Amino acid sequence: LSTTAEESEESTDDVSNRNNHNGKDGNEKGSSTSSYMSAEDIINYVELLAKSEPQKVYGFLEDRELNDYQRILKVCDRIPDAKALIVERMGDRKTAFDVLAKHLSNLLSEMLFAVKEEKHFSLAEAKKALASSDKLDLTKLMATAGVYGTFLHALKCLLQTCCRDAPNTALWFSAQEMLLLEWDKLRGGSTLPSIDFQVMYRVIKNVLEYFLHEMCMYVSPSQVGSHIQLQ
Image (cartoon, rainbow, N blue to C red; front, top):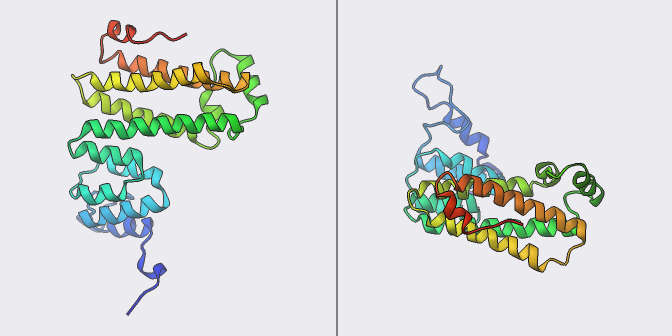
């Protein structure tokens, strides 16, 4: 007998509720993604998240023991942060880094486009923010459509990948080179109106300053300083 899609496809709530009853006794409470999920249940749950809430896949996988990496990797192929996490667990940290670096570069391009098209905030709001303080409230300006929040998450993932590569420092300098390249693109080739340029200029400068602060915890400040000078 055939079934319809609605009858055969479980929702994320169906999977989590079913697994909440797999505890040691009837009084034990399970989390929404119980630690008693089988390997097959994990795959099914990730597939559902990937379709409905891909931004939650990374958080679900981050602290979970996994078995079938190849199947999960196939599901996560179009979710950069989750894909990088799985690739690193499979032993290829450099490729994981490359996935995140490309993702960051794409997000920066998306942010630049958003500024040009005024997708996230009005120019009047940006002008007011710039006039009131030298420190731009990036989160407030970019949070409407979530691009800046997504970028910060991707940056955090990249930083964590660099940290896990200690005591090696090659990934730190690769990340620095990538961010500097984006910085130089903005400084040298922008044809944006003045206010838009200032907004993106401060976005990337804030990102670089944050990155350098984190980098100095793992790399000699003198080495960092010899590679970059923000203007």
